[in-house]
Image 1 (cartoon, rainbow, N blue to C red):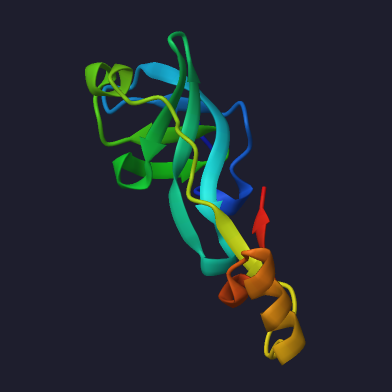
Image 2 (spheres, helix red, strand yellow):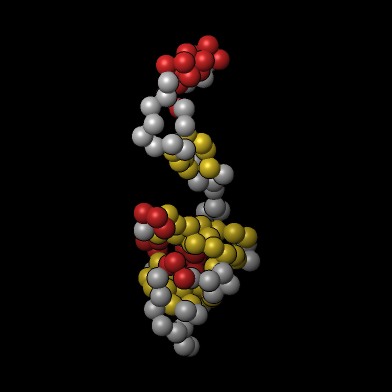
Length: 123
């Protein structure tokens, strides 16, 4: 079977077949789990007959244009866990800007943590 050229995780498309170490198809790529700004590949969420499953990056042997090869066999792939919610991501609204003493006072009176000013949780 021709899986095409080797590729990086950034260009792996949904729907690409995923093959166990024995060559059996165990599912298709639903989406890649990564932190591209840090160049960190966490793994892949697979669509399988049993539902969505999370495949950690260290279980991936190689990525190709038309196929993903795994280091694990079919039975181990069938026992993969369902994907769970990830850790929250945070970003700074105004990096390097020190809040005024007045805003700090208002935060304290309002019961907010003044150290958390200018931080927003990303969905």
